[in-house]
Structures are given as structure tokens and as C-alpha cells.
Image (tube, rainbow, N blue to C red):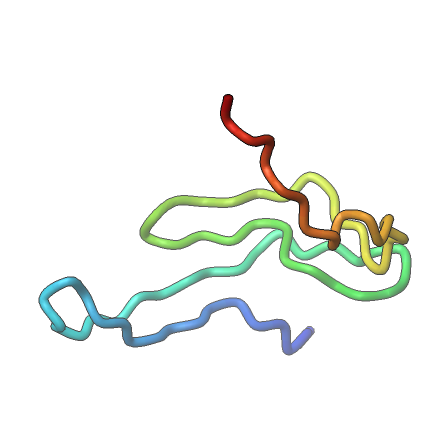
Length: 75
């Protein structure tokens, strides 16, 4: 059965010495979310693995988080 999910992404990046190298990222552990979107719950790269335990899509959020705040003045 073909799902056509993206299971690997390869890209060229420049290192500190301006040398290009190819880096691969693998996607696995696909889960269908409540709204029908399928998401890779595990992302693996040379830097390490990330595993998501849950994903919330289009969850309402408070607009206040987008209001900049000034840090308290130092005394």
C-alpha cells in the first residue's frame, strides 16, 4: 500500500567553513489527527531524534501572547 507520505528529506547546507554537505532528515511514526491530518510524530536527523507525544491543530490561543512586554527596569 502506498501512502505517499514524505519519509525522508535531504538538503545541502553550508558548514562553518563554507563547505556544503548533504544532511538527511527521516520522518516516521505517522499518526492521523482528529481533523484528518496525518503527521510524522518522530523526526530523526544527525543532531538527534524528536518524538512528539501530541499535536494540536488550530487550537484557540489568547491574542495577549502576541503583545510585546517591556522587561522590568533595573534598580
